[in-house]
Image (cartoon, rainbow, N blue to C red; front, side, top):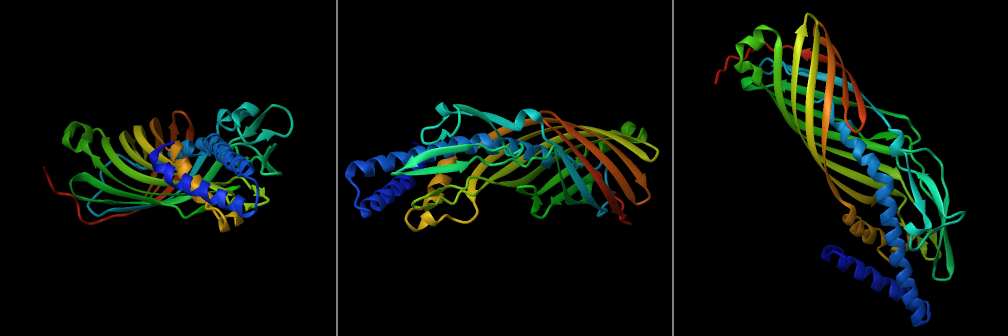
Length: 351
């Protein structure tokens, strides 16, 4: 066990020992209970990883597309404000995973020796798992998925033109309630149009830009409702938190009112998990939620993604309508309506 998780785990095990000794059970029963609690934590860790990881992987794609409306430079202090609708397609391969009795040390399937259960992106199919804590049975249903083939949510995005063809971009969504889950994203980025250095590109309505940005995504799901003779465990909700640094290259060409854009994105994401929601009644005797959250550090991840992007944008005066398709491991679409507040301050700075 990593040193960072050892101290809370030892404290928790000591509390369990006091709990059972307070019930005047034999020393061998206390040792058995300690072992059973450790096994329950191992099983919760295993199931958490399999269940929530597809959703945090998907969250990266959902937050990655739509950053750049156009590689074209804005005027100084020109502001664009847009309402975006993001639509993510949940892939069939990430909707389920298989479990079998050999995967667990505390729980076993109530029926059979193996089963296919939904991930957080899956359907509402459930099976029962059973285990024994002390002399009592612990029985629970595996968690349901969101049961949605497409996940859609709105968010707001704005940008302002700065000096030297640089643009500040920000995006934000409130906490969006989805089916059996919640999602929220916010982020900020800087874009620079480097086609300004090539006169021939500008004359042919070709624009090139680079962008660097940071975003935070939070996605939470209903999880395990575990009841024991010693109280509920307080792991009814699990949350994935994703910190993403993104770099991308975009190019476009204008054809009258139309602008066609392509891009390439690379990002790196630090993914962390924690059990959220109300604490269980067992907390009066044992800080179970804290112990599990410490153990969840063992499945923290860092992932790198390479994503392609294609877009088409149509201008109607100060309004623009845009569709964006991001593709790679997943497919994500983004549709937006944008309004530009034109500035009377043209950029005149030259390097």
